[in-house]
Image 1 (cartoon, one colour):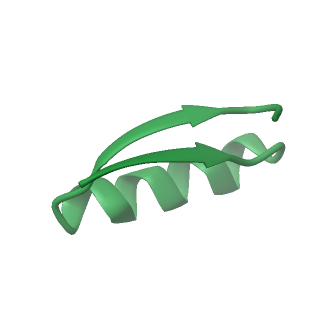
Image 2 (cartoon, helix red, strand yellow):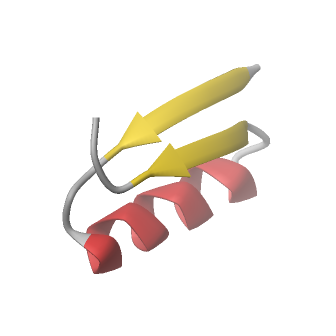
Image 3 (cartoon, rainbow, N blue to C red):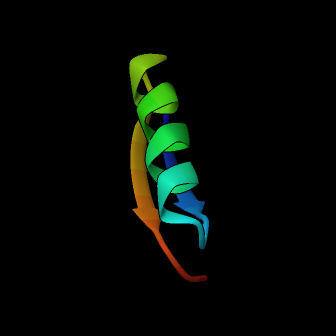
Length: 33
């Protein structure tokens, strides 16, 4: 499953993206939405 993550806080964005990717998701992320 592919997800789009929009989170302003860069550290939180990276952490959540890494967790989701580790769980098998394909993650596209942005720092503003």
